[in-house]
Length: 277
Image 1: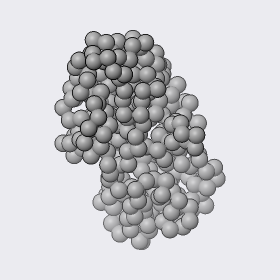
Image 2 (image 1 turned 90 degrees about the vertical axis):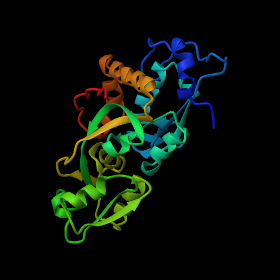
Image 3 (image 1 turned 135 degrees about the vertical axis):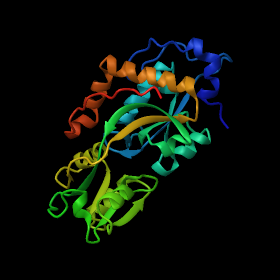
Image 4 (image 1 turned 30 degrees about the vertical axis):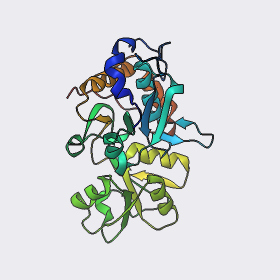
């Protein structure tokens, strides 16, 4: 297993000065106590426009990416020493537990069940679950209209589709794929009737294909996005919480939002209150 940042953190805490620049800035020093270059492997989504996306040129963009860069900078790690690893919803806890990532910033809702396996810093954003349908669809206006055998898609490892089935539409047919982009393509070709996940994710897909899709209904849940990390790593969690609070306070959080998912027309929400749980 590679030497992760969370293993080195105790030995290098004194060197990781907190006075770093916004959005991926860092201190001049990148050395650990052993003299090796410090690095981070951060889990993100690769297929969520405006949030976490791998671009054709191999770069990464989105609000989650900007949050990850900012946090890394506050931990003393420069952008050139960040490796982004794709973290599908169903694999996030495993990636953390196996030490394949140092932390995950990937529209990762904080839940009690997940906290049994991993720890969370944050939240750094609060979203709400909604529905994406074709632009010309007039039948689906919210979760209550998904009965009569309509086909609903979400991703494996997400609680979104099951929540709709349990609370709103008992006879909805659930379809699960590995990625939301696969759900959106199924919606595009008529294989399913709606996609459900958080409204900010759906807004990104809608903006990516203007005129093809629309987000319908009012949000019907509260999703607190946290940064997932190894269970009970209190030192790292506290440092990430400090970074999130600094990002909000110095205006970098607002700028990161406006430069990324804000371009979809999704309104700027109030910044969240970090929970020191």
